[in-house]
Image (cartoon, rainbow, N blue to C red; front, side, top):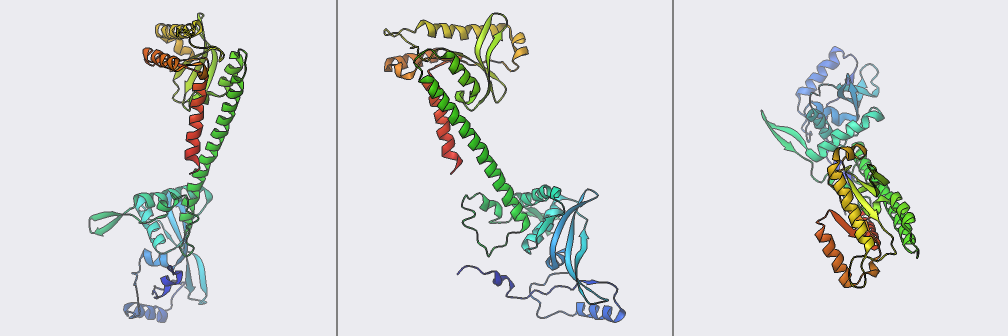
Length: 377
C-alpha cells in the first residue's frame, strides 16, 4: 500500500494562536504566561515567525502593492470581543527586497501545503515566473551567518511534466498546489500549441506533396503548373524556405524563375525546366536544356556579383546565393547518368545544385517522415 495523505497528520503540530481585537489585562497576562511555558506535547515546534503564519494561513495571495511584490495572508483568528472565529486577510508581507525573498515565501508555502493564488489574472504569469524559477534554479538559504547555499527541490513538478505519461502516473494522494497547476497548465499549453503548429505544417506539407505529384503525372510540358505549385509551397524546397518570388527581374537583362527566401532572410535562385525532359542523351552527354539552365544560373550569379549594390535594393540579403536547376525525372536516369549528375554537382562546388523533380519530392517526403517520427512520440 502506498503512502497515505493521513500520514502527514499522525502527529499534532502546535502553533501560536492569532487574536484580533483589543486584549484586556487579564487575557493579555494569561497569554504571556502561556507563551513562556513550554508545551511538552509540542512536536515540530515552529518559532513565531513567518513560517508559523504561513502554517496558520488558509491561502496566500500574490499581489503588487506600489509595484512591489506582496503576499496577503488569509488566515483564521479569534475576535477577542466576540470570541468568534474570523477568516480574513489578516497580514501582509511587504518587505520583499529581492526575488529570493519571494522564492523563500513560495518555499514555505510549498513545504506547508499552503496554496498561493495571484490576486488578478494579470499577475498569474509573474507568479508563475517566480515559481518556475524556484523549481528550476532553486533559492538561496542562509546556512550560517554570512554564508548562503543554493537549495533545490528534488523530484519537483518540473521533472514530472517532461514525461508524456504524466497524467497516467498521477498520484491523487499527492498535493498539487495552484502554483504547481499553473506550471503544469503552461507546459501543456506550450506542448499542445507545438503540436497544433506541427499539425498545420504536416497538413500543409501533405497538400504540397500531393499537388506536386499530381502535376508530375502530366504527360505534357508543364512548367507553368509546376511553377505555380512551387510558388505556393516553398516548403517543397526545404523547411528553411518561407517564401518564393516568381519571375524576379535582374535589371533589364535577366528574369529568374524563382527567388527563394530563407528563414534567415537570405535568398537563393532557381531555374525550372520541364519534368518531361531528360537530363542526358543516350550517349551520356548533357542535353541542351540542362546546359541552358546551368548557363542561366551562372549568368545570374555573375550579374549579382557585378551589380550587387543594385541587386540588394530589390532583394536585401542577396549574398552568395545557391542556384537550383530543377529538371526531369529520376526514373529517366540510368546508374551512369546518376553518377554523371553527381559529378556535375561536385564540379559546381555548391554554387549550382542540379535536381530532378523526384529529388525535390523525396526531400519533401523525407521532411514529412521526420516530422511524423518526432511530433507524437
